[in-house]
Image (cartoon, rainbow, N blue to C red; front, side):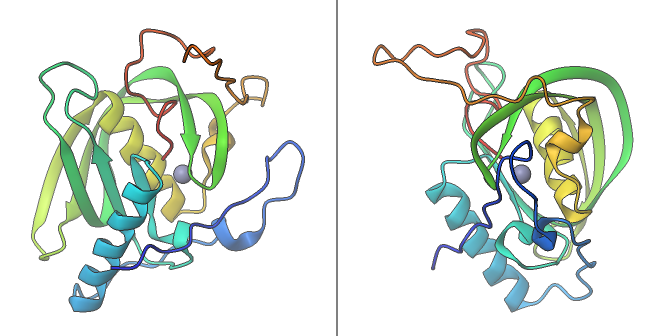
Amino acid sequence: MPALKIIIEPDPRHGTISQRLRKKSLPVETIDEGVRTLARDMFVTLMDANGVGLAAPQVGIYKRLIVVYLPAGYDDEDDPEISLALVNPEIQRAGGRNVEAEGCLSFPDLYGDVQRYANVTIRTQDIDGNTLKIKARGLLARVLQHEIDHLDGILYFDRMEDYSSLRYPTRTPSGDDDEPANEPVTASSRAV
Ligand SMILES: [Zn+2]
């Protein structure tokens, strides 16, 4: 399965974002073998990039399809590993708010603080065409909101009041960085 090429765009403070990540993606009408192959290739691409989420428009395919991978223990020690490929996902309910650092595979190494819903309920199809509901909180809720935004051409820094929190965390040889120490795995340590 080939890895796909992720669209990379410039730092929004210093360059113009092309329309490639701004287009609205179309609903998937038929979940066929082509869609399943695309989902598999996107998953390989996500793993190669060491990310936690990828949306089809990030590889130049304007279909409402996202993949998510969270390692075990992503929020709490006993959280199981999560691998999802979701077709036509939409947010049905949302509540609470929180602010966390977030990055995006299309803007390498850049992070910023984004306010999002703390809890979401998603209605979606899986790649076998089954309709399901996913209740998510924590990092999963954040990643799902980030990826669904991609399907509408919305980028994480569009959700910021200003760009003052955008930064490139610098890592020292000791492995320390300037990210908060209480975030073992967050969208700030693995981009989406
Ligand atoms: Zn992204």
